[in-house]
Length: 275
Ligand code: DGL
Image 1 (cartoon, protein in one colour):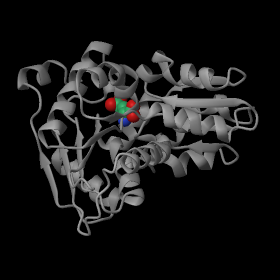
Image 2 (tube, rainbow, N blue to C red):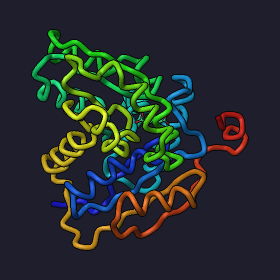
Image 3 (cartoon, protein in one colour):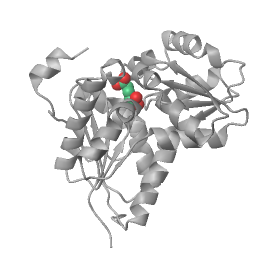
């Protein structure tokens, strides 16, 4: 048995493309549909209710595209909305936090794990809770790095300002007992080189890798993989399509069938929450 329906991936913006890239690498025959809510990002400074409501609209959009599985390629959406939405809908969903947290517990030798994420994800303490359940001996330090999101979205990863911001934000982890750092926001793997330059001895965990391993295992176990030889990638964003398209093509460096604008929320709501 096989299932030709696409895998859906959602994120507040560009960052989810780091997850799409992993899907492309680990699941070479699967069609992928991605949605990034550029119109209402950053999610990391929104309220719990707003994040649930925006994420619900992305889930509904992906369901309308007949996906067989939804990967929450957004830590902030996972922290705030995964639990609620996975009860509301019957489509299978995978969140990005648990697999990344588990991997980090296997990587650390010092039992000190750092997490950088959006303000909302850090405040939710989602990583701390899951790591604490897996191993109560491990100390977790969460540091908000909300400004990294804007750096990535504005394609300024190599700027002097980005370097200063990275050094200032990551100072608590420099020459410290934190030997492992979770990139707890899907935008951050796009700054991996710069983070690694500043913290060369720290092991960086990108939760996308273990999340897609989990997705693959799920599809295998349930006979839902496909052997499609000509898989397609479709990317959708809710605004800023020109900039999105430029960065997406560069980041994914693969054939993309379609990149287009979609409207998932009312325009009024968008205008009210556009910061
Ligand atoms: N990329 C998102 C995450 O993984 C959040 C970025 C934002 O919209 O603030 O948390």
